[in-house]
Image 1 (cartoon, rainbow, N blue to C red):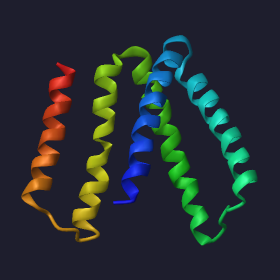
Image 2 (cartoon, rainbow, N blue to C red; image 1 turned 60 degrees about the vertical axis):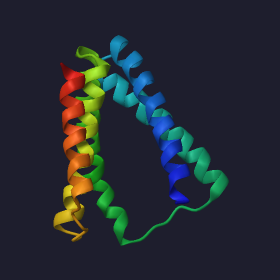
Image 3 (spheres, helix red, strand yellow; image 1 turned 180 degrees about the vertical axis):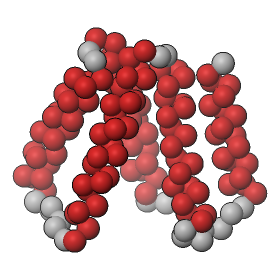
Image 4 (cartoon, helix red, strand yellow; image 1 turned 180 degrees about the horizontal axis):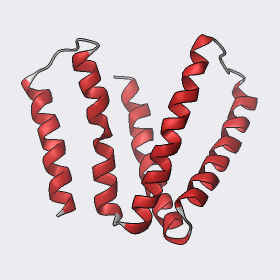
Length: 133
């Protein structure tokens, strides 16, 4: 359960990111919001790498090309949705992205499908619908 402290840090940080992203998206277009957040993130990543010195290079770095492209499309669409829509609807809806890796785990990785997990997925969908009404 050591991973839960990192999951909690992620939860809090992504919450702050979503609030900051909404503020920026209200005053900038999606391209500008994506650009400035990405540039800022890269700056902090460079500082982090200079301190930690643990950059790995192997054949899997090439996955970064298609993944980076997909992330760019997602970020542009996300900030446009935040710009024109309410954060209270956009954020829960876009966070249903977790269904894709869950289904990947079930189908490709053969992870067990339990009634609890099925109920959890159903609750996530219902919560999204209720929050968007």
